[in-house]
Length: 106
Picture 1 (tube, helix red, strand yellow):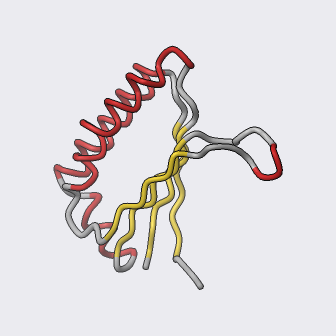
Picture 2 (cartoon, rainbow, N blue to C red):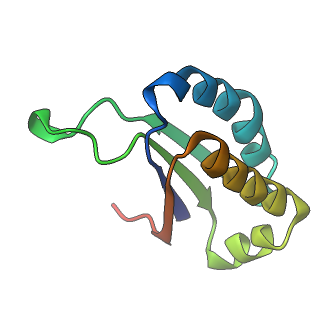
């Protein structure tokens, strides 16, 4: 499977509840509507390894059959809506978002 891995930075402590509500009720449903998406894996990070602070707050993995499927998805209205919403979240909650893509390997 080919995937995008999105790493979200933490919201301000006073915004965690609002961020989580918005993420679950608005952003994730938009992501689930992206065509050609095979699986969506969401993780809320609890901490870094061996007691270190977590380097990010949330991880979203969007899995597709191959790069061509991701490309087709990226041309859709649903993709554009999800991307625009991510920008709104960055602005509203002051979070960071980094993303990369690649093949999932065993």
